[in-house]
Image (cartoon, rainbow, N blue to C red; front, top):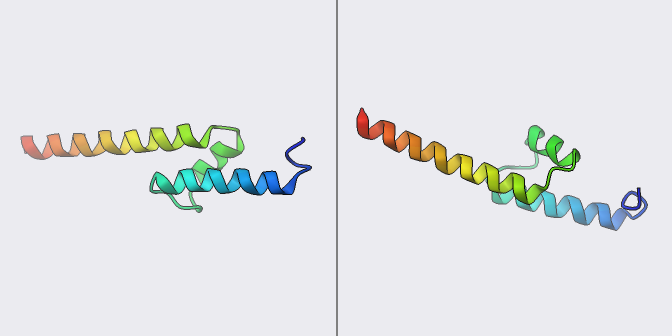
Length: 68
């Protein structure tokens, strides 16, 4: 409630959230990530999870290519 009373704090929070998402290779149009952040998921944690999932996906693809 206190954050809503301070538009600058809201803008600053949104800017930080979007920066974290963009650093994970996402853009502002990614609805699921935005919805998660609206549900108070930590954007830094979300960004880290996305990056780790991408690394794991790349590793799996590389392993599949070696066995093919």
